[in-house]
Length: 162
Image (cartoon, rainbow, N blue to C red):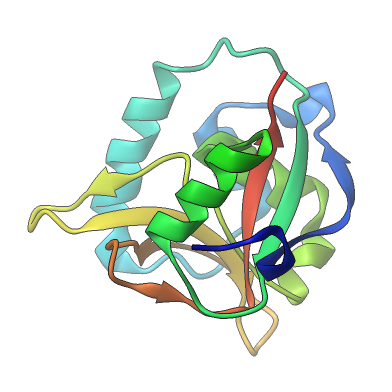
């Protein structure tokens, strides 16, 4: 079980400006992500269809990045969120943060566990943003099985409960 000393909030709260909350496809285009693996294209299409139906939430949420000192499981991430007053951020919020705060991608793999998709084999995936070693922005879908461990370099995008 993770204790508060095992996780931390990174830096200041992030507030997405209302003009940054666009449709997912517009956010992807604006983000100019050079690396979107071809294997993820079908899943991203499914994500766009799913999230376009859930728009209408109040724009401009206050977000935070949290990290863990040691490798952490998805189960531990969700447990920490449920114990803290934080909620997992969505795909749209992840894209908005990538557009509004691109410097964060230079330092961290940023993960949004608030939106999960199952691929054709039943494997669960979550959207992630980072920057490759060549300085190219990357949007990908990371494997998120409960038994997988996230490295301490991962940062989880969260939303303060309103």
